[in-house]
Image 1: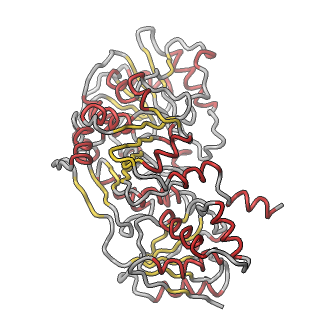
Image 2: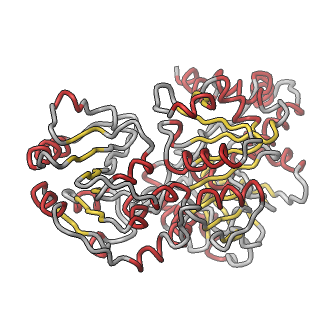
Image 3: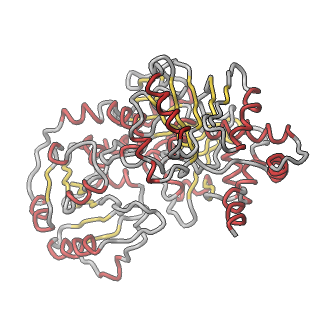
Length: 519
């Protein structure tokens, strides 16, 4: 039974096999595929970029990715591609330009002819990546490494992103500090007096088990009771949660479900916004209208998630109960946060989205756009760690790190996502400063014929080495995009699939590869 489960876990699904097949098709020139939140919504950066491409670059073919039943304005419907459909896999494999605000699934393997741009979805307040966990973020790390350019709106976000997702100094791509495309729409003021928007953060960790807390429901009920008839409060939950509350069933008088409208264009009409730990607080700064923080569970949230900035240091009024929130909403507000705008939104302007598109599609430079190389120029040494078991091999590896000059090269420890048992994760935490980590995410990509060839080879039966070679070369580039290691060391010597890389990776130019087997 364990063998069957192992096969199911590692064999490509029909969709993944379809994607591999489409990768053999010619690249579709001047074609752009845009995807946000894995297709859960069409808003924010993806909306702003799409709208400007369609308006100013009509010669491009545009495809927008959404899941079934996701709201899409009528003007965009003809450009829609359903997430994980056959058409989606074809365009993901063949579109010349790919744009995302987070990541594609782990089977994604950017082709050399493709250009991939990530527009990170906001200034982070909550801890990300390795600040929260040792494993579990491998696919986002891999996507950030795969991108030709990663766009952020400020230096703070750049530092947090590249550090806590482990791509700083070791990846040969570019980080671009530029205007936030979605914030372009916040410079238009269509405020409706006494219209408020409440945007609480999702508090869960497991996306497979999303629930609504009783505390949130009780707060919503109380707010509805306290609001006056000339006041209205729209509620926009996180995409994971938005379908879990039936507003009609509660018969709210003053609370309204967020309308079927793009988030940032609707925010033009909002007098004040209420959030807690969401990056929307930094975006809304550019309006110079008030942000209120409804942090009724701050201690609990801080303990569970952790934050880069302290709530008490943020220049926003904090409240912890519905009554205080209502009082704050009714008070006059004077904007005094110019320093925060300078720190987090300095390059934002009403033409920001177009400036970014002109930069990408017309190579038009702007004083608002700063391009920085991510790689530090040193040789990358990729070391496969296996499980870091309690044995002499692991001890030898860790001792080696204590003696080698870590400033001469980039030493990158790698393992498969989830391979290191939780009880041994402390070894990653205690690595010497200067050791990088890169997590291998997703199953090995292989066609049916490649899978059979590999199975035969691993069982010492006749097999086509050419097929195996093609498979591993392709998958190495998927797993370690833009790392281009000069050295690859299979330190423990276990795991024949990784040992096979030693003869296969020699096909890559200018690589010096060593196999270190400890006994």
